[in-house]
Image 1 (cartoon, one colour):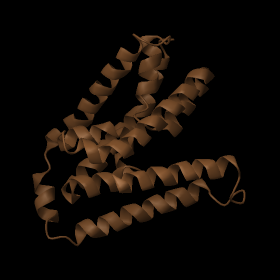
Image 2 (cartoon, one colour):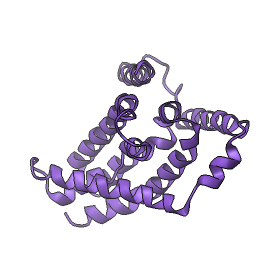
Image 3 (cartoon, rainbow, N blue to C red):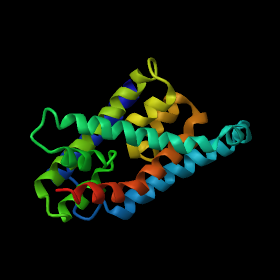
Image 4 (tube, helix red, strand yellow):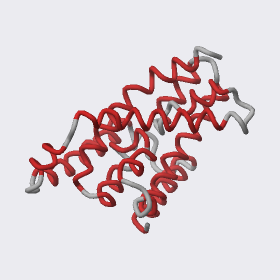
Length: 200
């Protein structure tokens, strides 16, 4: 719990720093962020490769794991469609927002470029919240839910922002599952968002 709150705290601190221009302009670039993410993945890879259980983990992976991102997709869309019952947005609009799977930087841009600026803002906020809520809830959820359900909560972020928390909480055995889950969802976001936007 403490580790998750620290991560969320740094996330909020970053937002505040950006809003008030605490750091010099141009100091934080997309290239720098990608570089840090790659460094994180390298460190995780070294940790996995130096362990004695790497071969056992790889042998335990099954083609059926591809059904896991599909389950996350179905669950997300069911939840998004249910939101239409209590919100003023249509089912298709709610599905377009949900199709971001917490990939807020891409889904919000795609929806806005489709001519739906207000809904793009909703997608941005909604998907940021999914990521932040997952960061806070993962340490609690692992006590009550199976590993796959815990990973599903985080959507696309299981390969970046929530990855360290998931690996620390679930164990290194789940690292490959997190990466595969995120990769499949990442590639599906543009297709799902474009598909649902075509209906409104």
